[in-house]
Amino acid sequence: MPISPANPTEGSSSPSRRTIVAGAAWTIPVIAVATAAPFAAASANCGPGTINYSNGYTRTNTTNGSGTGTTTAGGEIDYTVSAVYGARLTPPANNLTVYNPGSGPSQLNILANGSATGTTSTQPDARYTTTLTYSFERPVSNVVFTLWDVDSAQYASPAGAFYSEWVRVNAPGVTAARGSGLSVNAQGWVYPTTWGDRGATDPAYAVTYTVPGPVTSFTIEMSRPNNGLLTTQSGGIGLSGLTFNVPC
Image (cartoon, rainbow, N blue to C red; front, side, top):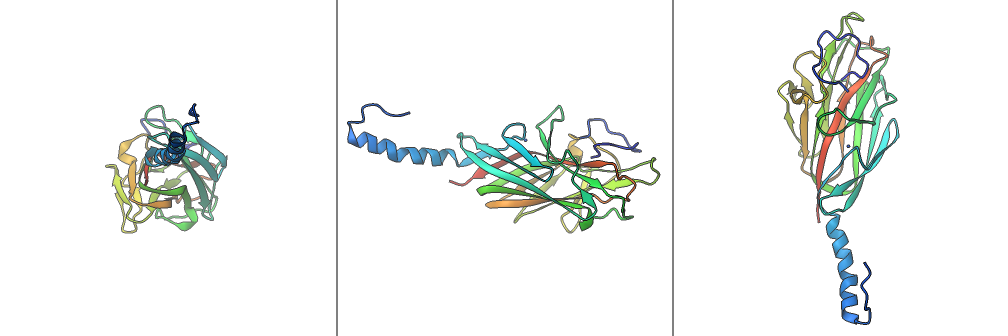
């Protein structure tokens, strides 16, 4: 997903880039209320939950952010996101901001700027990889989320310019459901099967991950090799729809 495209040879059809009880003279009822309150609070803080980046999320800087997810019972769980960049990438000014595509849920931008030092290979490369660590204050299970806009493009100007996006999630037992335009290699990297700058909500270029857990953190890798001709371009993927379960 390029944020500032440079004449891609293949176009996109959609935009391209989360009460006090009275009568305390009754001793037994007072004791009952006092012991029940912590149980009620604990119950609210477990069970199914969601994260909405448009509400309860704050970006600290270009590589860090934090927020609060909510359970269906009204409880809360805090989380943080932190990005580390390979030697030939830098975080753009709008990294870890919230993108609203106009249709569907808001997305957390996971973006990268290329450097003037490029590669001729379109394969994943640590020098061109952004690693996002997602951490929760306590264990969660059945974490489900979608990564959007996993694409690649060749450009007519500057001649021969390209970028290629690969994504991978690292967590025990993780599974992936890919869109029809994506494939996966033996190392678990998901990638587009054809060239083309795709739309931010195109399901064919989205992949939904499930982390069974329980976990307190997992990582998302985005490798974005380019040949060094797109030094002013930032781009990447979007993360949305994160749901989870907090064990009671």
